[in-house]
Length: 486
Image 1 (cartoon, rainbow, N blue to C red):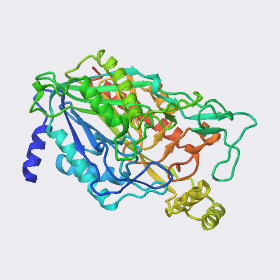
Image 2 (image 1 turned 180 degrees about the vertical axis):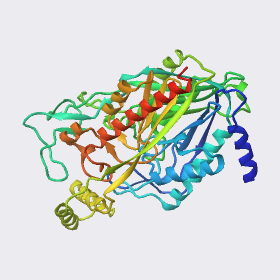
Image 3 (image 1 turned 45 degrees about the vertical axis):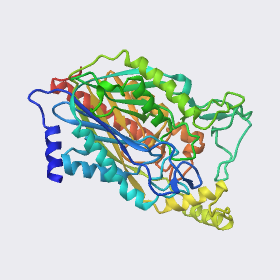
Image 4 (image 1 turned 45 degrees about the horizontal axis):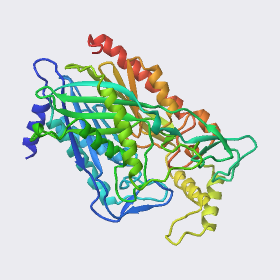
C-alpha cells in the first residue's frame, strides 16, 4: 500500500515536459473523538463536551513544474513546533518535499481542542499523538489531487470587522498589572467606553488577500486561501472552527463549488489564514454598549462580511497559467524573557498563599502569572524561531510562529520588493505574542511575561529585519532566474 501511495505521489509531483501550474486541495477532519476535550484560549482550563462544527486541516497545494508550495491551515488556537516538525517529517518521507515548501499555520480559533499547554489548559496527550499523521494525510491527499490549473490573487478590503483592542490609558488614570505594577499605558480589551481610556493604541489592517486556483479542464474552483488580520470571533462553547470555518463554507457557496457539474471531482476547499492580528479583534470598544447577539450569530456575520470583500477581490483577478514559485526558510535564535531569581521566589510565595478555586485551578490573575513565571524559569535561555518567505509570481508571503502585531504586517507590506504581500501568523510553531518594542514599553496583556509572551523585547525588530532580508534575497533570485513574475 505504501509503495502504491509513493508511486501515485511521485506521478503527481513529477515535473511535466513544460513548466505549468497545477493545484490540488483537501480538507482533513482533525476533530477530537474523546470528550470532554481540553480547549485553549482562556487563563483557566476549559473543556468542550461536543462538536458544533468540525476542526479541519485545510490544504491548498501548488506546483509550478519545478517546486511545490503547500499551505495547510489548521483549526487550532496554538500549534506547537513539535507537531509541525512531525507533520513535515511524515510528508517528506512520502514526497521528498523540503520543510520550506510546507507552510502550516493555526487559525487561532479559541474553540478548538488544545494542542499545546497554555496557561492552565493542557492537551490530551493521546490526541496530540494522533494529530501529525492526520494532518499529514490531508497534505498528501491534496498533493495527489494536483491537476492542471490556473491561479490568481487579489486584495479586497473589509474595515468593518477589525478594531485595535489595545487602548491608551488617559493621563492620571491607571490599572494594575498582575505583577503589582501600575505603570502600563496600554489596556487590552478595556471594555466599552471605558472612561479611563482615550483612543486605540495602534492601527488595523483591513486587507482581505486571496490566492485562488481553478481547474484548467472545466473552470472548477479548486481552492481559495484568504488572509485577514482578525484575532478570532468566538462565542461557541463547543468545538468549533469559529469564523475561519464559516468563511470556508461561505466562500465555497459563493463560488458555486457544490454545482452538480463538479460531482465526482475533488471538493473545493476554502482556507482562511490569520494575518497580523496580535493586537486586533472584532470588538469596537468606542461603542457605549456591545451589541447582544445569539451564540454563533457574530461568527456568521463576520464570515459573510469578509466573504463580500473576498468576492469583490475575486472579480479583479488576472488568471495565470504560469506563476513561478520559490521559498526560503531561516531559523533565528532568540532570548527568553525570564523572571529574576528574586521574582521566581516571590512567584512561589504568591502561588503558595493563594487558594485554588473549587475546580482546582487558580482564578486570581496574580497567581496565574506567578505560575507562568515559575513555568518560564524551566524554559531554555534561548529558543529557535522558524521564519519563512514565499513567492508566487509577484506576490510575496511571510510566515511567523507568533501572534504578530499589526504594525509588523503593515511594515512588511510597505517594504516587500514584490508587488503585493501578506503575512501568515501562528505559522510553523508557536512562540507567543510579538509586540513591537514600542508596545512593550506601553505594557498591557500581550507584553506580560508568560508562556504566551516570552520572547526578548527586541524580537519584533530582529524578526522583521530578517524577513526583509529574506524577501530581498527571494526577489534577487527571481531576477536571476529569468522568471521574475507573472
